[in-house]
Length: 247
Image 1 (cartoon, rainbow, N blue to C red):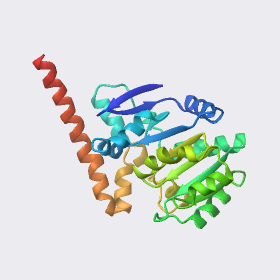
Image 2 (image 1 turned 135 degrees about the horizontal axis):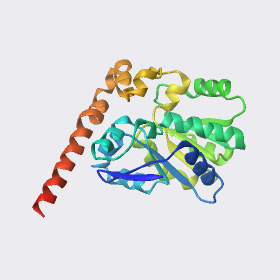
Image 3 (image 1 turned 45 degrees about the vertical axis):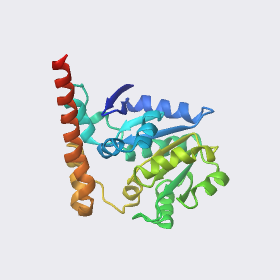
């Protein structure tokens, strides 16, 4: 595993086979683990939200979910590629596979005002993963359901930073949970509420452009990822260079 800091925010890379081994170690441990799937918007938000920053930097794992972070690290001179990303969608797929193979329970926590409704999502998961032991809830019922269903895995799709703050504040109230992670819009993709980006766009790291095409109201969020984030990276590098020259 390699760890980097971008504008003070921790991000980590590791091969999938190591990731799977680490997740199993988490699931078999006596402690609880929060995982963050970090994208450029997270890093921008962390510049003004110190609580969010602390949560990510204290997470058991902070994967890279966003091509912008990969490009920033390349710009800063690191040997890294798009293949080093572990997106929220991919992490969810891996955790579902581990749950099925090892008889773990998953609680899917959806946002009540999101695109995908609980009943519809339940049916889609049941059809797609008939062997999975799972339940669905929203922010109003998640804690109660976690305390009765006793899942080992909690996947939370409330959007950032809401989901990550919620996990940090409530994970100890879900004593059976060993892994809790925010997965953003992953549930909308799984349910088919939003179509996945074409493979060619994904391979080029242009998922953000696809999301903008099908959801033009995301322009403010996209602006943070493709305008504000690169600006902050360049500004930080120039400041460090100037400081170095002064010394």
